Amino acid sequence: MKIIGEKINGTRKRVAQAIAERDTAYIVNLAQKQRAAGAAWLDVNAGTHPSQEPDDLIWLIETIQAEVDTPLCLDSANPAALRIAVKSVRHVPMINSISGEVERLEGILPIVAEYGCAVIALAMDGKKIPETAALRFEVIQKLVAETRRNGVQDSSLYIDPLAMTISTNIQSAKVAFETMRLVRQEIPQAHLTIGLSNISFGLPDRSIVNRFFLSMALMAGLDSAILDPLDRDIQAAIITSELLLGQDPYCLNFIRASRQGLFEKPAD
Ligand code: THG
Image (tube, rainbow, N blue to C red; front, side, top):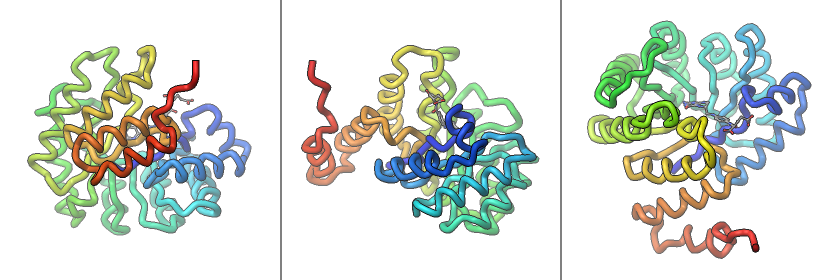
């Protein structure tokens, strides 16, 4: 599976501070560490007020790209910020995200089509997230009709079934898995992605919830996720799940990870 590194996100306090202070070293370090940990894209979310967002996003992009060549995933709902940002990226970016919300779709889809971006499509229209897998899939079908109409290939789509926190809705992981299965069956060329850590919000021991969720989602067809690539336990879950799903020929990745000590527990 492909990892979208989540750490450069201005809704995190320390990152917000780095953006405000134009702390280049802090941001570059986050980018380098995530690349070294195998991120295929770096999510970049300025998390600032829409009026400030274009400037902050451009600063983040230029700061990262001066040192790291990994493709970026531009995380913003603001078409104005995205339109400026796509012009300053070195590689064709992923855009995070479109949804069925009309303004967002009409603002962002033309940018995706014009620049040939990959795009995350959220299974929601308006502000409401449908409760059932069947309803989420209906939204996805409408979105896919729109992306196709605009000439975006299904293989450029990363469909996000949305992981809602399980502490307030005990069905939420199940709904996500069922939505993934429907996408896999009906839109086989499309990719799937998910913001992994939402699922465990409000629970203790979040990391273990995230890991089991990821493993089960991989079984349901997930092939990318927005997560913390520096979390060794998550990396161990990915490598072991891929082994068991027949995606690790000759068990080479698993054995290499074991030799490198990825599965070692700290001594008592
Ligand atoms: N789907 C899509 N995009 C998304 C999400 C999604 N982007 C934002 C978010 N959800 C995923 N990104 C993050 C980034 C950072 C953190 C969590 C999700 C994070 N959280 C800390 C934690 O979980 O403990 C707390 C914050 C902090 O460190 O200050 O770091 O679902 N398409």
